[in-house]
Image 1 (cartoon, helix red, strand yellow):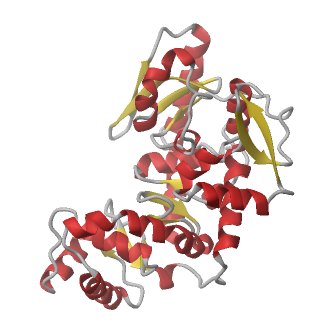
Image 2 (tube, helix red, strand yellow; image 1 turned 90 degrees about the horizontal axis):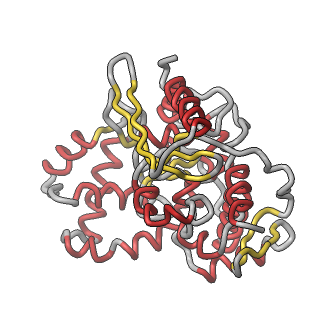
Length: 351
């Protein structure tokens, strides 16, 4: 299998070249977890994989709690479903916590401070109360807990990792936090091996073909975890070799179906980019020096290949989109970008 075929399969398995899902939560269910660090762009990442996407529909799902936003997998924001959040946290929070240890020490927070903060948050949010960061800051400060520098972020992330709080509905443009027990159903506890197997199967089904190192990069787990999960799922996964590397995908994946190319404006941190350690399949060789731009800025993808970056300026009644190509564009590429731009504007209710 060639790199271009791998790109085509990834685009297909990530549902970027055909519209499959009707509801925002259906997308997140299939993807299991989607990076949601940049919120407005993260909503667009969901929209790209929907039949008739609108920003309002995704916002409504988040506000209603059909989709939750929390720190999981790696120490950054992700969209997950209420029914998945507990086993995902149980699996990945210990490694995030361990990775944060140095930051805890630098900010002089310990178990006593965490416990005190947790108790304050639990009492203040009890009964369905959803609090903004401003309100939480005032509560903690009044109790003698400093929130300067990174301390507030650390205290809130720790409460998320300990399965105390998660995202609430937005209050205007402000994010809120709510008690996890009041936002997500209690689900059966599964052992770690089952959780690893579940995450491995979901990853390679929705993002394959991908390597073991890609999974490790995305999940924050270990190579040993990846190999154990593949072994458990040996009847559901298959592998192929390309340029000396082994790529895994669902056994039912059919390369002959994934023949349609995709052209779209990818949001920053889209799963098509962030879910892989090696991005050579979607970045043309002549643009590999642009890997940093592809990773940290919204990317223009034409025919399954990233050929530039883009940015948007949002006005009251319009969105101006600026395309920043890495090279000269031909007429077909220009037309594809115009179509992709119209799709983004329609998602935002401007067409």
